[in-house]
Each structure stands twice: as structure tokens, then as C-alpha cells.
Length: 468
Image (spheres, rainbow, N blue to C red):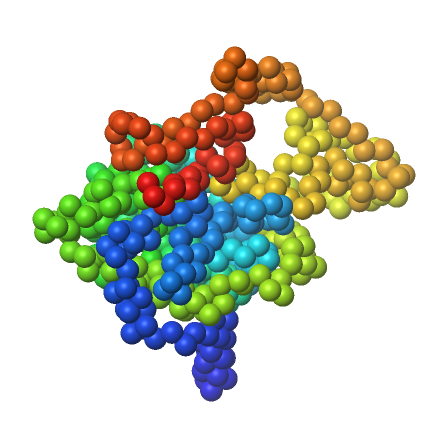
């Protein structure tokens, strides 16, 4: 019993130290908030440059950076790509969850990323959900155990984790409008269990709300979920952020427990909230609480004193590569080994055929916010050839295509262009207006030549001249 208590004590001490040491008191944080104008307060609770929270240098508040996602650091260039999260759940290995969280945090720090938008822990209820690969299985207890270890590993390395998507995010189709209607017992026993574990045991720094409605109310403004359950019953002390462009009513979000709107203050902005504060529909103290929650996490992770967390870290460390490989191996499940063909004996087998359209390309994960541009991409064909050696003939055939194969150059001739002074220019002109109505003169004009939807500029809020 004494040994168990000692280990628990050491674990608590380690967690506290790893998050970061800070000399900033609660009174200091309150003073920072008091020195903000109302406009500055509201601007702070809206994202900045797509994946940041703005800084206020005069108040000693640093700008901090976010990055996707559950299987590696997606933003800011290449990173180590990890197996799908369902693979991590299939390992049934809590220590592996810890190691993956720690390793991803190491590469996040190398990129000076302070907040990782991971882990994801939605329960599989619809097989066609396009993001099931990101989630930690269909068992609430298993998901919670793996998630909290992932969170502790990540946060012990000094990077804030984000538990997402809260809650009952069962499908991507029509995700802005679909309502997950759930009775109370099912909600708590199935959909919320992993989040509760992440909050109360993992001490996760932030929670990301989902796009969908729960019992008719959008998650980003769901007072019952965010205020009564999360911050009330569970005692969550961190901050609640929206998923990207998943807010629908600014005042509803402000009163419904949302602390940070991402990627910018599109709804929870001065135009909406200042009139509500002036007429008594919203108390300024509610805005203060949102800022305090965010700054408390800065303080917990030592970001006031040390906003540059990249020092001493680099990409592609040996332990990171080993962790990714161990995670891939740990989640593999051999369902059948007919005639004991496995493992393959290279001395006896001379020919191996790989059949399937993806066999000769590096498929390193799913798309969207979980996509990672890997440091060392390798196709299945290349991997088997490498292991098999020169004495085994490894070949590939595409097999049967399940869909239409488009010519690779199909979209090369698509072009957007404008004429300026009689000269043809490839790209589009964009005009930005103040407020929601496109009226009057634009406050900013920009010309875009890169129209790829994957370009992060699509998320970014343009720099508006200060005098406007």
C-alpha cells in the first residue's frame, strides 16, 4: 500500500512539473483581464490567423498556436504519421496511449505548437461516419482509458491536449444540422463517459465541441452540456472551444458555455456581444470567465514565462519513430492464419503479389484535419520489397477499381482569372467588409493565386489595417 501511495504521489508531482512552472498568480491573471478593454476581451475569445489565439504584448500575454490532430502534427510542414486511432484502441494498451501522446507532443513542441487538437473519442454508432478512423473505438470505457493516458502523456510533455468532439458526433453528413437525440442514461453511459474520464482523471486542458445538435441544441451553445455537466458536475477548469466554423448564434454561444470560437470570432464578436452586455442580456463577467479559463491554462503550462516551447526539441527523433512503429504493431489483429502461411519464410517463398489500387502508393491515414504529411512515406509495395529482399519477386497489380479513375491531368486546365488593365491574371479578387452585410466600401482587398481548398489560407483571418 505504501508503494502504491508513493507511486501515486510521484505521478502527481511529475504531472505538475511537466506542465510547466509559473510564478503568475491568480491575482496577476485577474489584473491582466481588468486592463483589457471590452473590445480586446471579445477579440481574445475569437481565434486568430486560423490556428492561433492572439497575444497582447502590453499585457504579457503571448500568442499561442494550435495544430491538428489525433494521429500526428498536421500543420506547419511534415511530421511523423501515426496509425489511425482505431488501431490504438485495438491495442488495448494504456501505456501505448501514453507513449503516443508523449511522442506527438514532442514533435508539436519542435514546431512550437502549444495546443494539439487531439485526442478524438466519439463512439462509433454509424458505420458510414467518415471520421471513425480518428476515434478510439466503440467501447466507452476503453475509449476513456486510452484517451486519458494519451492526454497525460501529451500534457506531461508540456503541450495542451483537446478532447473532441463533445458530444454525440455520430456522422459527418449534414453535420451542421443533424440532431443526435439521446436519452439521459444513454448520454452519460455511452457518449459522455470518455469525456468525463478525460476531464476528471486526464485533467485535459481543453474540450472541443462538435458540429451537430444534441437534443435540438447545437453543441457550441448547449448550456446543459457545457455549463451544467462539463463545468458544473464534472468540475472542468479548462476552456471549451468550438470546432472550426461550428458556431451558429453568438449570444447563444456566449451564454451556452463556449469560451473560444475558432477559427475566428465570426459569431461571438463585438458587433453581437457589446449590445447584449449594454442591454443586460449578457454580463461582462461571463466574458471575463472565458478569458480566465484560457489564461489559467497558459499559467498551468508555463506559457507566460516560456512561450517558445520549441527549444531542445526536433522532428524525427528515434523514440518518436519507434513509438509510431510500436503503435502500428500493437493494434494489428490476426484473424486467421490458414495453413500457417505467416510469418512468410523468405527462403521458401520466391514470389509475392500485392493486389489492390492502393498497394503502390503511400496511404498514411485518412483525410481532413487528421491528415499528416509524413516524413517518411512508404507504400505497401515498397515496404514488402524492403523486407523481402532482392531474392523475392514482389509485384503489384491494381485489381478491380471500385470507382471511376480520373485522368491525372483532368484538372490542370481549370483556371480562374481576372483582367486588370487589359492584362489577364490567374487568380481571384477578394474583398472583405466590416460586419455580416456586404455593404459600403471594402476594408481590405486581396488577390489570391492559390485556390487549393487544402491551403490553410482558407481558414485564416486576413490582417485588417489598424486604422480601419
